[in-house]
Image 1 (cartoon, helix red, strand yellow):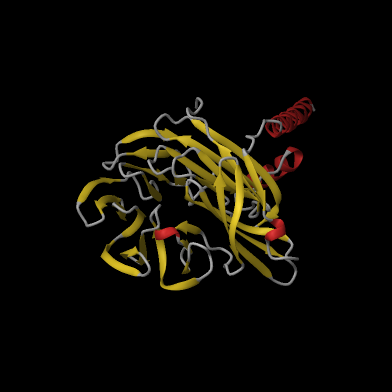
Image 2 (cartoon, rainbow, N blue to C red):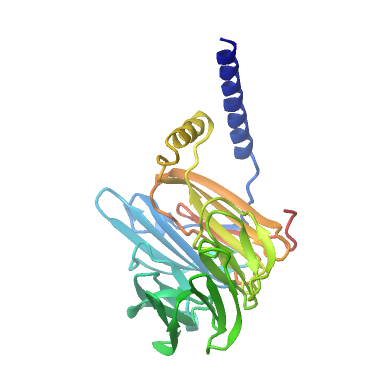
Length: 358
């Protein structure tokens, strides 16, 4: 009887702590934007709530945003071109010809490239024209001038102008590209080469899991992420320069400033507070991890300094449960600004010159 009473008391205490921590986390102050722009009135009318959002900096003063909205019948998407002028956001161009699920990237001569493992589309700088590219592009450099096409165990690189110009091809699994450097994985081996094939470094991973996702940070280092443990910043020979614990979950859309010194994580997850969270956790434990929520209702955007590991930005939001993994945040080329498209609003945040402590 005593043990049962003790167990009940312990359970109530755990529930109290969880609820208190949830309430405390909800009260943490959010970063405040320096400018906002509402896109709802300019979207395709009568399309319900936003179900897909993606945003990218085309330059330090130009931003592209794509929003898709769903009603009971169909889905409508819009692509916006927005200028950032001091403390003002201004719409320059818009088109309704956009496919849900496509990511957007800057391309040469002010063009916008949309796609990722699906037929890619190249938009003109003013969005007045678009044309489909014959290749399914798998990796795109930060500038959009270099792109790749991948097959199982092989890849091809192209220079993107007004057409795709072949550069080189090779074997292995392409991990990341810039206009100067490519990262290739074969089994446990990671190779870093110049765009024309000159070796720049190589190393062996400790196991098959580590480095499940690798990306260039500038042209001198890269980060490794297995989606379960610590994110590592390493040089081209695999020597660890920094270890970070930015979040749980996996973010295949991490993006950095041009120099690689600031890294943005945009992660969606399922979060439940208070008793609901406790009960979901209990259900997952008692089912040995076989039962868990598959939908998402929270987005966390964080920016870290890849030299010191300090946190530069920490923002989150909750929304009605959905199965769509948005990519609604981007960092500017200089690493000084973050753009977030939440719902129908684009917000710009200014990052500190020096990031805070870990």
